[in-house]
Amino acid sequence: DGGITQSPKYLFRKEGQNVTLSCEQNLNHDAMYWYRQDPGQGLRLIYYSQIVNDFQKGDIAEGYSVSREKKESFPLTVTSAQKNPTAFYLCASSIVGREGDTEAFFGQGTRLTVV
Amino acid sequence: KQEVTQIPAALSVPEGENLVLNCSFTDSAIYNLQWFRQDPGKGLTSLLLIQSSQREQTSGRLNASLDKSSGRSTLYIAASQPGDSATYLCAVGQAGTALIFGKGTTLSVSS
Image (cartoon, rainbow over all chains, first blue to last red; front, side, top):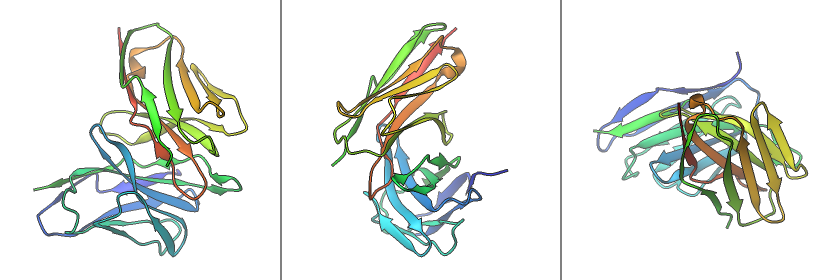
């Protein structure tokens, strides 16, 4: 059935490592997003993409990279340049409507911990 | 820059009570406003989406209103149940960017 799948659910990163979080959707949505959630901070936008092969930085893009080679996939790489990567990462998708993005749907999240 | 504020940050009520969660935003040039529910350690579940041309949306015991000119939205939960305990987030959609979120209201309903 349709939805957004994030994997893995839990991820552990050693200092200096790059790690990639997966996000796949079968909703045929144009737009996809990555948010970071920290306790007491709410959701903060990392990157978003409204079309294949194009993406824009959000408020906290430093230390992260993305690609959008396929409509259904939007992987996020947390690089060693991200100094405080321990957080809960959420992926979302939506249709790009005539008046902007429409209803957004979220995956179940990936919890990344630096060890 | 758009800012979204949710008040209160936390709320505890006994089962059966009707309650209102508040969301305010600083820039009224929005396309829509969406309310989400988040259970601990989980992703977000969409509850209601209100387009900028609409005044309210209803789903079961939930009713969300939107007053774009004053920059406010409310989520009304009727006859609250312990299963309603969760964090409720509102987010606004604008041109040229993704959803902008408030920090949420954590609701606890006791039996």
